[in-house]
Amino acid sequence: MPNGTSCTPEEVAKKLKISKYTVYELIKRGELAAYRVGRKVRVEETDIESYKQRSKSSPLHSAATPLPAANSPPTSASFVEVPLEDDLVICGQDIILDILTRYLVKQFSNIKFLRNYVGSIDGLTALYRGQANAVAVHLWDSDADDYNLPYVRFINRERGSGARVLLDEKLRIESIPHHLINGYYDEGMSHMAIASKVARGEADVGLGIEKTALQVPNIDFIPLQKERYDLVIRQEDLNKRHFQALLGILRSHAYQCEVEGLGGYDISQMGEIVQ
Image 1 (cartoon, one colour):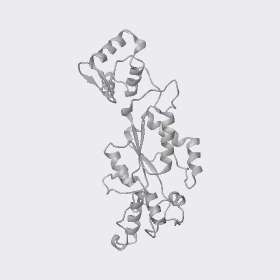
Image 2 (spheres, rainbow, N blue to C red; image 1 turned 90 degrees about the horizontal axis):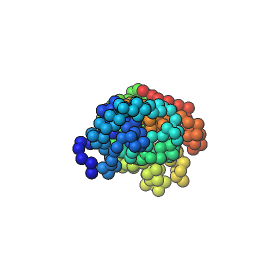
Image 3 (cartoon, helix red, strand yellow; image 1 turned 30 degrees about the vertical axis):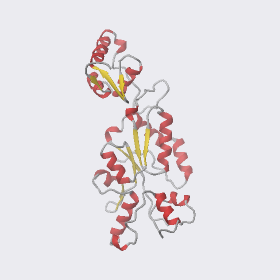
């Protein structure tokens, strides 16, 4: 085990006034010595100083060697290996997120993309706590007659799914108390769980999306409202390499065609940034 004070790649980047990804590239090329503690990368202070001295004597090894812009498509020549500590967590239950994850895995095979199948409010809570990187939400606010933006601004709203929020807003508009609905407090953890319960005859009606209803035999679907489904990320992550890649996939013809082929999705605004 190396002796002395060690630094994370982020700390090295601050010391050298370069990006974290440039640090990883220097390590990959063998120009900056590093070691791992489990999954974490560490660089000794002495190795940082050694690199700085070599850079002064050899301008071709300057730390300012540019990497491709964050919004440029990755190629085999410009690919920068990012360690597993840069896992990316995507929250949401819709199948299009599984497709999105598959596209990301193809483009960044060394990054571990994780899926967390939670509802909208739980996802936003995870984003707020730093436990997720991108969250798909469909939360309707009746006062603004708009989806998602009011809830993104106010992260401390009560926990729940997008469907539950929609139901509560509709009940509030109609002045219907929750306790008058038989089964209101009997909860299912996903759209599929709700549809399955109706199909088994354990409930007469449930609130869910059309795509799930079409997958379960012997149930009908009554349209209530067309929803807008947004993917929420932190502003400070927007220009990072793999988030730009995520946006590139959302805007790509291949991904949009695959989603449109599923039926029931309006892709006319897919890839647009809403702030």
